[in-house]
Image 1 (cartoon, rainbow, N blue to C red):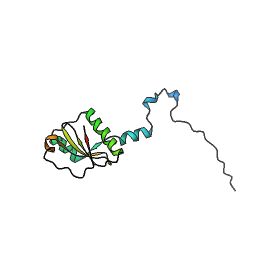
Image 2: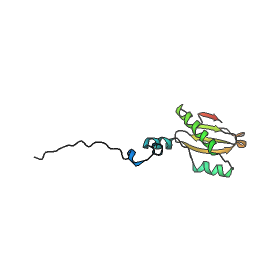
Image 3: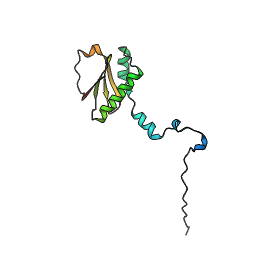
Image 4: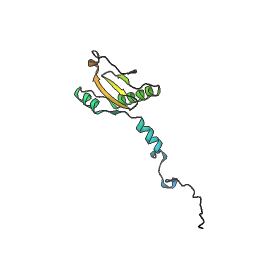
Length: 121
């Protein structure tokens, strides 16, 4: 019979301090995964509507929308209406995707259905 020998191999991290890599430059998989989950996507339909209607959202405004949508999702909201100064967005919080967009002028004559929350910015 062959004898099986199991040897313990000590764990060594892939990067050690001797590589002179600053910790702030290294992100763990978990951090990348969390960041990817905290970004809103724009559906093709919403992208087309934003382009047709000349809706431009600054990076700072987009970050605020993103933060508030994820805050609403954490409270159980699945599909919020996001009212901004210049636009209204319908978002799938579950899928982290903007479904459609319209300018605020259009919202005055609209009836919004299938939403379960409203975020006013």
